[in-house]
Amino acid sequence: MRTTLAGAPSAFEGGLLPLGSGTWAWIQPDGGWGEANAGLVVGDGASAVVDTLWDGRRCREMLAAMAAPTAGAPVRLAVNTHADGDHWWGNAELPADARIVTSAEARTAMDEEESPRGMARLRRLTGLSGRLPGRAGEMGRYVRGMLEPFDFRHVELRLPDDVFHGTATEEVGGRELLLRTLGPAHTVGDLVVHVPDAGVLFAADLLFVGVTPVMWAGPVESWIAALDAILATDADTIVPGHGPVGGPEEVRAMRDYWAWLAGAVAAQHRMGHRALEATIAILRDPDAAAYRRWLVPERTLISVTVMQRGLAGEGPLPRTTAVRAALFDQVASVRRALRDDAG
Image (cartoon, rainbow, N blue to C red; front, side, top):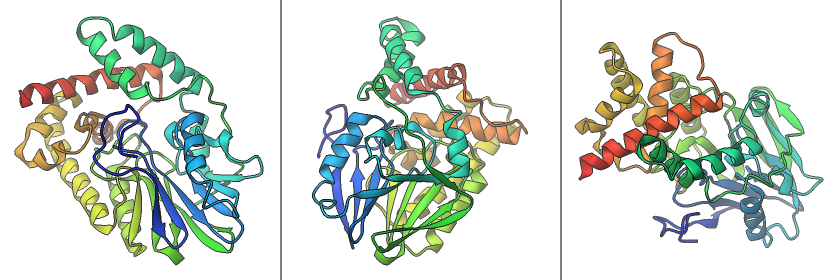
């Protein structure tokens, strides 16, 4: 697979990639909005899947690619790493007898997220608004491009069967999977799946490689602590939620990013700059040059907004459609500013 979901040439190889020791990564180039990764662990007569993508069609494609390694080891376990739909809305495509598990915090958040029907409605509305001139049309085209590769109309939600608090050990085909909740960070209930006998860790959206991360929950200190915990596992191969497969070096790069952004946001906050102004100033700073090369740098706006709310002593970012629409309007504005800078 050398194309993105939109059909553009990709920056790296995608599809079902062997990691060794009976583990695989499902990698979706280039790791932008909705282009999520997943994983497979094959044991003796049974397998486990880590995450199920954003709609039924994408999940069916993934499961079809997994047919050969799972031929004698059907999927009996699935782990949903957090509540974002692009990591679990494909659950209904799993075998009926597969057991699904997630963290208690993620399961609660799943009930609070926008529904597939709501996303289908948003996709339709942005398709219409994208024809308008000015900022409304710009935001509509941005969100439409994000949602266009997915079919939310036919998503039937299948919620996890079991939850755990803190840590859990699951067994599949004689293999041990260590589950650990490391949120709140990207979301409130982020968990990782460590396969010790393979030296593999599925980090989901606690790690982005070559792609700008999004902080919906925070605080940043918690995300940095989560990355430290991942490094402490000594896993050699680490599968991100978005982007190509990495390792400890990529985890340290993400840690450096958050430390840098935290300092930059604090400085902007002291100057009284609101999120949009602050984000553009941060990304225009020479210190941001390396991070501007990451995919979708405009998403920095969302993380800056959440971090500023924390500095102001405000509560979590509301999960309403109106709030999300306002955020994406500003995200599109940041993208326009960066493109204007590039000439």
